[in-house]
Image (cartoon, rainbow, N blue to C red; front, side, top):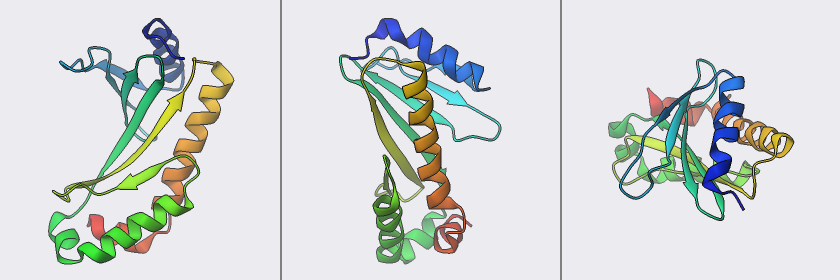
Length: 139
């Protein structure tokens, strides 16, 4: 299982891919960080000791449209989750954004982590690309 000592390898991997990594320690987890990229999803990464990494990307929504059509918005997000390979999509009560979340389980392995990132991005791309209903909720 992923130990905190493996985090430098994860961060190095993300930086190699062009991400800028910023440590964002919190009281609950002093090892969490955000990884930003010009053309890839931002990653909010929260290490879970002896488990792996919780990885979340957030996307802004038009809260007024979501609240007005909450049931439709939830149906759209549910469909995105159904079509996903490793991610779960959700809309919080505040309807300001929708989240794409998943967990990388186990020790860092270069190939496995690369495959994980590819699946993560694939799920996001399937949810966003051509999803007119979801795009409409973000305007």
